[in-house]
Length: 364
Ligand SMILES: Nc1ncnc2c1ncn2[C@@H]1O[C@H](COP(=O)(O)OP(=O)(O)OP(=O)(O)O)[C@@H](O)[C@H]1O
Ligand SMILES: [Mg+2]
Ligand SMILES: [Zn+2]
Image 1 (cartoon, rainbow, N blue to C red):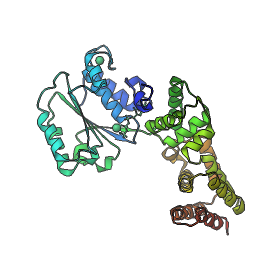
Image 2 (spheres, rainbow, N blue to C red):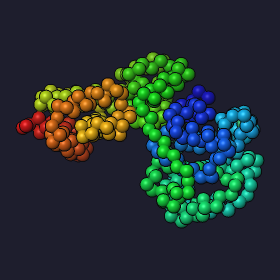
Image 3 (cartoon, rainbow, N blue to C red):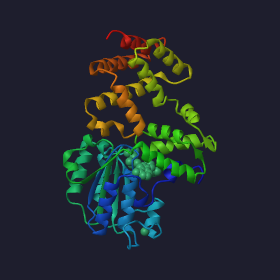
Image 4 (cartoon, helix red, strand yellow):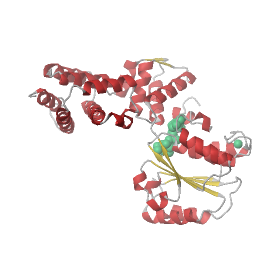
């Protein structure tokens, strides 16, 4: 199974293996213990944070033949069939490819029948926001009177596209983005299982780029491991990601606060010469300035923007932010948004950024 993608290979098989999402795990374990599992759940939140994983865990847990613990045993026939994707009673519908009403109608007609071998029929509808209007209506009818043997788990990254009538019939859980620290920890564990040494700053850069998603972190790690190198360094990760790390952004902002336009322009050109993508760089820069602005406006909003940063990085942003007047910071952000938009159509990709730098460093 060596070539199995990392994130599939390491999909948690028990609730205990989940990283974060404690609020979800706790509530579900409790419901399992009290035999009070709901008939409809709605899992929302960022991609790659465990929605499908927990949906499958719940499907196993309610059907597991070993009843001593609320965790699925992964050994009984029910658990094994589900793990191998063989159970007729776990029905996974990807709404992104099945937008039509037919699938939901079929579901509605089929749901009357008792499970073929398991205790519960579990329907997982992924990307549920993609269902068409009529399909939502058909689903709603089903959710209004679900038979005792049915459990629905709807999952979506875009809750705002799910009708309120559906939402209100489900027990809803928000899956949170994972912090950089948590992702680093998890990646470290998995590289250990894979017997690959990855230096700490390299793990941190992967985790920052994963932006809260465990799956994205594991895909990046897998991509890097496929080079068959047993000692992975920060430099290698940077080259593979083709993105600039926060340090490059921070240095540029530093030059701007000191109004050193020459240094700043030199810096941009160095970045470009090293083969970094300037569009990606300007995105990172704008993201960084946004965080700075928000922290400056109200430091209690820190949670909103710093989940994926290390403590030192947050401190760095706050300190740099103190060197800007609020009005200047706003001006700088607008200038770089404009520059970012113009890079693609410019004969010299660095020119829009250079112009923005000169303008930022002028005047008061
Ligand atoms: N909280 C977590 N703890 C441990 N591993 C996780 C977690 N979240 C995601 N993963 C890893 O990422 C993979 C994908 O997770 P999953 O399919 O559950 O994400 P999702 O939230 O359903 O994403 P999407 O919105 O894209 O469908 C899992 O197989 C697992 O390896
Ligand atoms: Mg999913
Ligand atoms: Zn079992």
